[in-house]
Length: 302
Image (cartoon, rainbow, N blue to C red):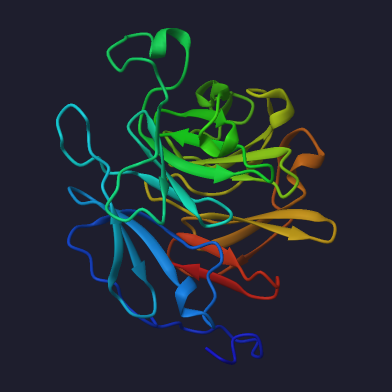
């Protein structure tokens, strides 16, 4: 609404437009240069089962382009579980079962320009013979220097150079760290990965977990600490946001108890860290908490 930044009371937001879908949407992402003043930038990518990836306009719900991702052996559509534009918006990457693909947005009707299996062979009992990671890639995120972090439902994280088209830098599992008896935050599958603005820290959120794991990525696979008290012991995806501040950055996350919690500069100290402050947003679970780029407004969903 036009008065969004002028009132202190909560707003009930209604959809500006609605995009129909032939099947349930697995994942979606918006164009990084999205600007309501420029209709040509109001773009959304979405994935559905048994269909190509769809590029749509948010202002005028219509299909602008499509990008097939097809198995070379069965010729069936592969449905990505994660999708992400490159920072410049010229390409996008997808994550599916042990596969990362990169598409050129200008090549409508065409498949990926690169395919990168995350394991040499899906048939090997030992994951990739000791190399790579196996499982559905459920989360993707770019660092400030375009290192791609990919997380899986099987609780592994991979780091890839050159915007997901280069070499695998590192692969590590979070299962042992998350189930450490000292923290006991739990977890049963990665749902979101986030980089700190400086690109030094990686934050990992899981389903059925009461915390967020923090890694200092200069030592890949070494946990720095955890953000505890998240209250997210559920199979629902509960979204997390990262906000840059004058003093560093903050992590905002909602919980099943309807509370939004904030951790300030989580990478400054090791070990478990409690929220700096919190506030009651709903009586129902807060499935997502997003902070306005100006840092003055918060949007949340239940």
